[in-house]
Image (tube, rainbow, N blue to C red; front, top):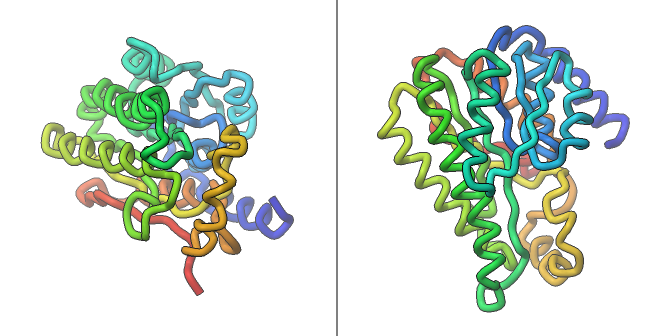
Amino acid sequence: MGRRAEALVSAAMKQLENQLDGRRALIVGASSGIGQGIAESLSAAGAHVALAARRLDRLEQAAAACAGPAVCLRADVTEPGAPATLVEQAVDALGGLDVVVYSSGTTAFAKIEHATADEWQTTLATNVTGAALVLGAAVPHLRATEGHALYLSSVAARFYSPWQGLGLYVASKRAAESILESLRLEAPEVAFTTLVVGPTISEFGADAGDTMVEFVPRWGEIGQVGPGILEPADHGTAVVNLLTMDRRVLVSEMVVEPRRT
């Protein structure tokens, strides 16, 4: 992150102070990237946060970057029983739940014709099944507080020409969005928001090796990689602003992407 970006992030964090005093938030996928950026922003705004992910060492680093106390919960949402256990651990640690953010996401970079059963299983287990089980387990607690749940989707799954190599990812995100639509009907006391994120600096694809290389030039051709990419803190600020709105207002979908100039 450059000096100008650091200054902007610092100024944004300063403006967030005390906006969410006392809110209790679980952020799943908080060890890096957008999830970590949201966790830091919520903490800067006064929320009590529980950070969850598979990598405990990275969680501890993320917690150290938070403005206030942060609980670290090691969890792999693809393991049987793990989503429900995670939610109960967060409730026990925070004394309840007002906010749940599901930021975890993965994919294999492959054309559909070459994708394996294991690659489909891994993608769906995290992006769809894990999300459904975490949010489902959180519903009774969020219903009690008339709380808020957010699921991170992507512009890659929504508005533009399909991104080559992201067929598995796009399918999983669209499936998860349909789950949120069902949850809105089943639990109207809870506000469910799909946060549609644009190109952002993150570790997404960092472990893909050479499998992503063939697709990157095409992404550039359709304008999805290049200058103007967002910082994770941009999404954190957007989430804080969303959560400070009057509770009678439901924002079912929010798109946060670089301004096209």
